[in-house]
Each structure stands twice: as C-alpha cells, then as structure tokens.
Length: 365
Ligand SMILES: [Zn+2]
Image 1 (cartoon, rainbow, N blue to C red):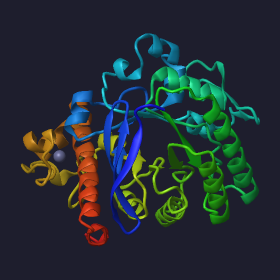
Image 2 (spheres, rainbow, N blue to C red):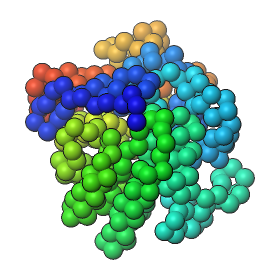
Image 3 (tube, helix red, strand yellow):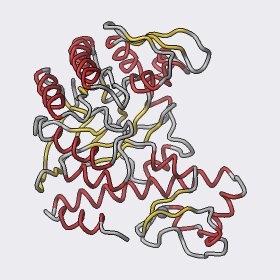
C-alpha cells in the first residue's frame, strides 16, 4: 500500500479533476488508459505511447497468465521492465475475459474454471490467484476478481453476481500483498437498487479506488451514462472512480460530467487498425475514395506525429495496400486524439467550464 495517493484539485458540478500518485508516477485525472492486452498496446512502442500523452496503460491478467505466464514475467523483473513501460500499469482481474468465453466456463463459489484459448488446457482463477498473478506482474493497480453477468440477465442473476462480487472482493482484499493497491468493482447491472447495495458493500471494505463494472456489455449509451452517474455519486469522494471498458469519446465526456476519473477501452486502438479515425470534425473512414488525393493532414488541429508528417492520401494508400505502417500511424493519431480529449476535459473542469464544453462537444456536427 505504499506510494499510492489520490488528491482532488478541482470540482465542477459532479465532475472532478485530480492527481493519482502511484509507485510508477503521477496520473492527472480524468485519464484514459490505452489497452495493452498482451503486454503491448498494439502497433506502438512505449516511446510512442508517451509521445501521445499516455500516462497509464492497462494490461490483461488473463492473457499474460496464459501466455507467457506470470512467473516468467516476474522472473524477468516484472511487467514494467518486460514491456519497457516505466509509467503506471493497471491490470484487470482476468474475470472479464473468462466470463466472455462461451460454454467453456464453470463457475462456483470459490472461483472459475475455464479452458486456455492458446492450448485448450484446463485453468482456474480464484479471487486469491488473480491477486497473486497481478502481484507477480508488479501492477500499480490490481483489480479484484468480479462476477460480471452477461446481458440480458434476469434480476435474480444480477443480484447473485453482485453478492458474489462482494464476497470475492473481501477475499481479494485480504489476499493482496502488493506492490500496488487493489481496486474494488461495483456490479449490479442497470438496477439502481442493486448498484446502490453493491457500492455500499464495497465501500465498507475501504478500497483505495473503485471501478464501475458491468457497463460495457451492450447497453445503449444513455444507460451507460446513467449507471456511471448514479454509481459514481455513491462512491467515496476521496477515492478514484474507474468506469471499465468505456468507450466512445461522447461516453467519456458524459461520464466525466458524472464524476468518473479513469477509463479504458480498445476503441481508439482497434478502430485505428480498422481505418476509423477520430478528428475534431467527427470520424473519418480513411479507406474512402474521397481521400485518394487529399493532401491535408487527418486533423489540422492535432499535433501528433502522424498529422505533423503525413497526408490523408498517404494514410489511405497505406491502409488499402495493407501496409503495417498504417496500423502504427493510425494508432498514434487515435491515441493522441483520446489523450487530447482528456486534457481538454481536465482543463474544462479546472476552469469550471465543463457544462459549456459538454454542450459544444455533443452538439450535432
Ligand atoms: Zn493526429
């Protein structure tokens, strides 16, 4: 529990700006975490991540456990050294991947049994083993194993999952030995009574930070925003709040307005590889014919390496020619866009101007 702190510096309505100190550096919040599923944010190096404004990355416990194995990473000096990322790392619990597997997962009160997607071998994850794996990786923030029910789920199933999540959170809290801090995860689906109960039970366990889980499983955007706002308001003021797996730029703006501090999503990196690029004037599908001879940068208001040196025509050419440079240049830009959005949100909160920013951002373009 050493080296972790969270300090709120500004408030604007329900929105907050803050500073989260971790053993590997400071994160200015609200912040977005690029997803480095297998110990790599696809297509970019650590230097490129820093250059885009990345402060903290997320890595997936399940993937690193299955391959190359957490013991090997621990023996090679931990995940920071293994992937050459000196900034903070948050790891998920592995539960989300395991619960997303179809038909291969057996759940009981003690944990969950599943088959490896790499070699089909039988594996088991418990609240304790998830924390042990995350300790071996050397995460700055370790997420507790939670039970995320799929949508649509009957209220009774959500209630059971939510209650089990609390029991597992207690076991995780007791088992975790560092070097970072554990975050609890609030479940409860879209049911406000269950969300309220889950938030109250987890708060009682006094975690250094809290996540809002179970909200990126196919709900409409309005439901995401309303669950985020409702849940954030029921978590302790003085702890960071992390909305897991969300999302689109519009979702981030709404959730920041609702009091969320941390985000992760594959959207900027996955969309980049599919040729969908975020700009100040909306999304661009770079493979479209209209960009064939377009000499302009993707976004003239963006200062990333891609926009500084390459035209839309060149990026379109790379994409339609299947050049691997397309993935790298597109990822650099999309990450710079997301980090730039978070910077603007932090500035707006600090100036008490978030409502105006939100209105302008969400206005039809
Ligand atoms: Zn750019």
